[in-house]
Image (cartoon, rainbow, N blue to C red; front, top):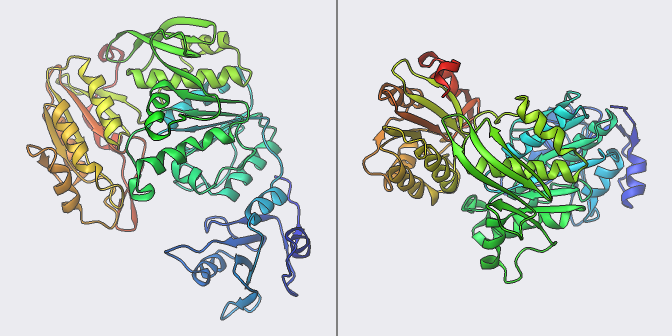
Length: 499
């Protein structure tokens, strides 16, 4: 990235506020403690958790010298031991964040896509990225799986799927400086509600699904729906919406979804812009027909589940709308260049006794229901599931997820899944209200092993909730942990086992 130095005097003039006699020049602006340093201007946003003073202290620890924050009147305070470190509180304009983002990070990739949905964001972004990769263009994606692309953009992003506004602007700018043409990102409901996505960051928007989640934050389904629906207003070229979401929209808003969305979904409905139809399925592949606009294709894809075919169809639609060649896309699929992303109904192997094991990120009632029903279509002799629910998240979904597990699986083991600061036993109590016959094993590693030891020929085990994740959050500590690493010693991966 080309480093430009912007003086505090220039910033004062652009924002039209008096910043006193403090001097300084900066190459970056940040509002996240992971991005600090002497050449970083820090914008502090107080919350229920942190005051301006506390945020300033956190920023100063990263080497930051100057912190700005909004306040009704001017005040200035310094670090107790380093007087050069200062925080200026001033009645800044309401759009200060947008002004700073544009001032420091003005460049954007040419074509951009954002994906929202209760489930399916990561898979859709991954599929779109793989299609771009196969076509030889320069691309970057940002989301749950981190920052990926060609070229590789070395950039620190947090573990949340939608970065804060200034980090987002910086990622776009840095990508553009490296001649990246295509950019895809996940747009979470939190990120949309908090305005983290710049107004010029989306050409094509996609809405994959809508079901209960995050009510600990949004409080009502209507609020949650409105956050998701706001992506339509940001989508400057096209707005792709799954037809199931479109149908649900009328119960949330009599006018439905604004922005003249292009609908996609299952079947042969003439009012759909794009569609997919499942014809056959085995343990690893699905035979599917797909239509995008007037272009049709029929073939096998290397994943299972109608929902994943829907995510791929959405990605194909965005690829096409952003100038991609569909013949090239399906050639890439036939060549094996497009695969299911890690931890998304991913087959990880067979046991020596012939049991099959899948892992999936499913951590909502709807996702768990879909995945278990897909595995049921494979006609297992017995289907088992190991899962838990995250701490400090929507508590009301725990009983529902337990009931879904008991309904679709022959046996259930409930275990820890990022309990954070909650009492893990109480989390399991809540889940078990929905699945009273479930076995409780707090240690996730032991729970997975217990599930594996139950498997015999023709059995299937789903390990759900963490998917690609590499840590387990216990208290405020991130403990290294991967479901696949626990499973690996007990499975055999071979083409002989793939059918």
